[in-house]
Image 1 (cartoon, rainbow, N blue to C red):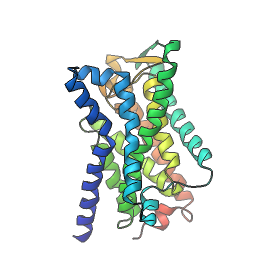
Image 2 (tube, rainbow, N blue to C red; image 1 turned 45 degrees about the horizontal axis):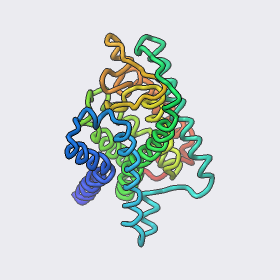
Image 3 (spheres, helix red, strand yellow; image 1 turned 60 degrees about the vertical axis):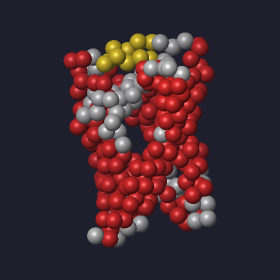
Length: 291
């Protein structure tokens, strides 16, 4: 019963922290309402989208101030390696970009999308701003779920339990997104579990934050696919879903809600699980799962 109370406490606080993460959306909504702008403007305005992405930097700033006097706790919820920071980030970013592009290529090859080139030179500035925005957004969500929640839960539960609970929380954060389905929820859970395993094994957020940011940036601004049911902010290509191939494109939710993408996530999860088993003497998940 004691552990249940602890888990509920951290889940509730993580849920409250998610509002800090979405503070940009809150102020954008107020601005739109007072200016007489429609909800459609809020969903499609590049200015609003970039602002909402970049404003997510408020969460790490908030946590740094909150835990300023508790350095040990800060290292648990925001474990950023001090060595090879650029290398770790670039490895994570390249992995996220490659994995999404591979997923997209498979979907396009089998007729899941009609792809239109929409690039023009005027998009350069927006491309840079979206790159920055998704780097911040991806890291912000990782700090919340794989940093704060997973870190706190791992102090009281086995790593396996902490991974499952934090991944369910991550998927649940997207329940209000347009077009959410059971397939999409399961994929979000798997994505969360994959990120959690990498975070625990590396004891670091650089890799997973970069992976998450790259996945969303290539999904939206680069290739023009809906990002978890929201407007992609397409700048280079626009990928229009083919109605008859929802198992490839995920419908309104985007490729993250497709059976094909779910299958690739299962394969990636399995590959990481096999690696952990083969390296069980070094694996932190296995060695520290007896709490």
